[in-house]
Every structure is written in C-alpha cells, then in structure tokens.
Length: 268
Image (cartoon, rainbow, N blue to C red; front, side, top):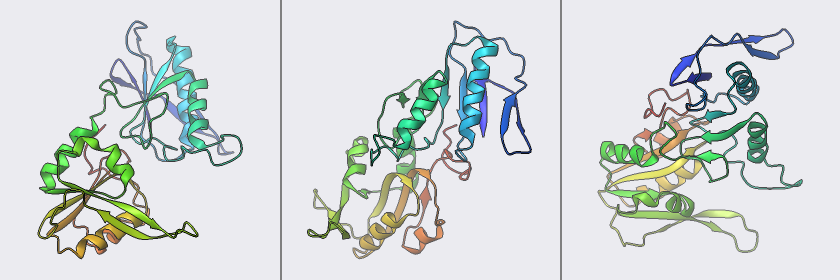
C-alpha cells in the first residue's frame, strides 16, 4: 500500500492496472504545496516489490505536478534491508540497487523503523515521524514484565545496547571447526544470572521462519524459566506463529510495520 502525505495530510491518487499487468499512477488530487515547507512524504506500507514502480511513479508525478524538488520515502519495514552484503558480481546486492532506484527518482531520504543495518540515505532519527525503537522496547518490557533480556546472537546484543541496563544473556552459534557448518548454539551469561523462575524476553529486529528463536527457546526451557516471550520489530512469520508457541514462547510481540500485523505496536 502506497500513500502520499503533503503538509501532513493524505492526498489521493489513482493506480490503474492495464491488461498486460503493468500499472500507472496518476490523477493526483489537487493540493496546494508550500515549496518552503517539508518535502512531500510517500508512505509505503510494504506488501510486495511490485510496489517499487508505484513509489517511483508517484515520486516523479509529485515532483512535476507540485514542483517539489525531492520527496521523502517513509517505509516502516525497509525492503531489501537484510540484503546488505556483497556476495558476488561487483556489488549487485539488492539494498544497493534499491537505494540507487530511489536516488534516481529524487528520493534522497528514506525513513524507516529499526533498519537491519545502517546505511546511507536511511534515517531513524527524531524527524522520521515514526516512534523510536526504545519506546517500543520500553512498552514491551512493561507489558511482558520481563526480568531478563535474551539476545539470540551477538549482533542483536550490539544493536540494542539501549537495553544494557537490564540483566541480559546472549547466544552464539557453534560451528564445526573443519567445515564451518553450524552445529548448535551456546549461551553466554556474562552476569552469571540464575534463569530459574524468571520471565525472559527474547529481543531481535526480524522474525522470518523463526528457527533461531525456536532453538533459543528450547535451550532456555531446560533452565526451568517461568515464562519466555519474544519481541521483534518486524514480524514476517513465514512459518506462522504457532511454531514459536510450540517451542515454548508464550507471547509474540511485534509492530504494525507490515500490514499482516495490524494488532502490533502502532508505528504508523
């Protein structure tokens, strides 16, 4: 779903689908735009990459009709955010390509919520119109009554240093030294915490199929914990949520960054 906000108000437009499957964004509603004000904002509630064409067409339409030099793209869930590493073929990784497409459409600022990795053009500051990740975490910590925070890997522990005031543990992957194959996980308990009868909250940015969280929950259950909950900023849940509950995770918290999670913590 793609929306246009001008001076903070939604402006209507139409998207036509032609018989060959292509689309056209047009019939922009009449609106008075103050060129000395904030840039028009395209709010993209990601559903599929086919919407990239809608975003680009709308950006160019807005710039021509309203005489806006640039547009801001506000996308709570950043598509291609996890495809941030150059694997082969001269840096043709998807996040780089996506940013190039946006830049060529004169979108020079991309505002998002809890990006998987920090990169140019992408902002999470106080001027995004989205809540801070810390506000989200503080809310869930209160709701879940967590006494110990659990990070599923060292990367998550580094990403969410704001939670360092809470007692915490984290996990590392165990690899076969000869093959490099992941054979299991191990818990790192730097504060020597006793997990028995404690409420644990697993914290990360994205849940896809959830296998990492399932393994962590199964590991933690051996310590006779009172309750295990999970909070993720973006819930893909490609295997469903029941697999998480079956592993011993009582509650799964997320945001409404994706339209499939309308009950999540409101960030748009």
